[in-house]
Length: 169
Image 1 (tube, rainbow, N blue to C red):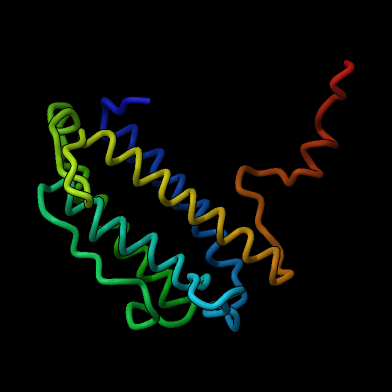
Image 2 (image 1 turned 120 degrees about the vertical axis):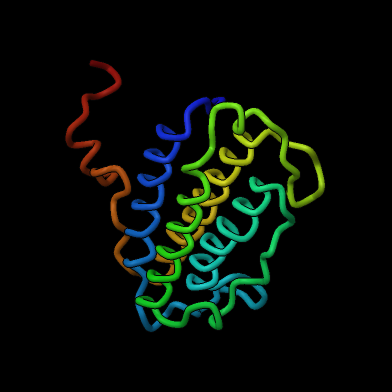
């Protein structure tokens, strides 16, 4: 999927972030820094990583600058409310940067964090894939913790079965 229009992309991006925030806000406040295994991200790390990478890697690369990402630990935001505020602030800064992109800007090359030339529209697509990947990890963490997982698209799997028809129909 090639991105030709920043306005439609930003609308989509805001929806992606709203779904991610439902998952972040479902995290038990007392388990934000829990890790299922040593050396992996916690729920809090994952949320901060999504926000920090969006703003300090993807947005900077789109502007033609190197990544300024410095990690995702609790020093960035500690506690669910602070994490949510940090995510919102980073998202708003990124949106402000992206709003100024013209169709020609989407076609120009930027440099990936690995130093590879890449079209801006491809970086935008990668930013979404990155967020969705880590949101999926957070969803699994919620399951491991026995925490309720919010439906992302309006229906749970069980509700979808009740609303559907059988494959034989």
